[in-house]
Length: 217
Image: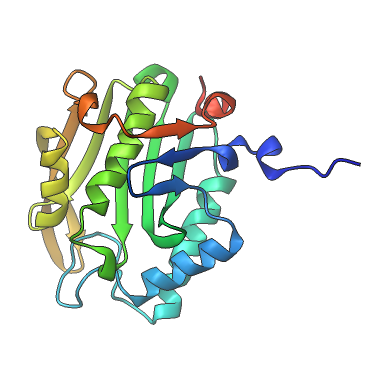
């Protein structure tokens, strides 16, 4: 008897994005636990608040559970009209963080939104830029997206730098509540025409063909 393989039922487990240093893919159970513990140790300094997610609230275990719940809900609530793909970022098998690609009504709108976090000890080494380039390669070159969007607090200089480096352009602002403070985010947008694919020729995407129906394609 041939044992069933998880990727046969859920092809996203066979999707892998490889960049020069990194591998992006759905984490398995033990890897998910490692990613959760990594987030629990911190994704930014205690005196900062670069994300809407309150990453410094609660205990390390509380923050780890947020990662678990986010991963499970992304898989459990997946539909062709509203999906959220959270991929673990690994270097030589070591978990570094999570990058997320999400969309609504993608077959019609053809726009995606990206977000990410890295463990604090892995920041400042270009991994964020490289991982985002991997996601964008999937979106533009394999899913035929027309544009990618992100929203970044104006005081989140690291994420602003990654977006600008990859060619995103200003597309307005939004205002959110960050605790008791109203904070302004830049809306940034990268079109298919502005995507400089030649800079990232080393990105390889495997297993996407079987996944296309899950993306509504």
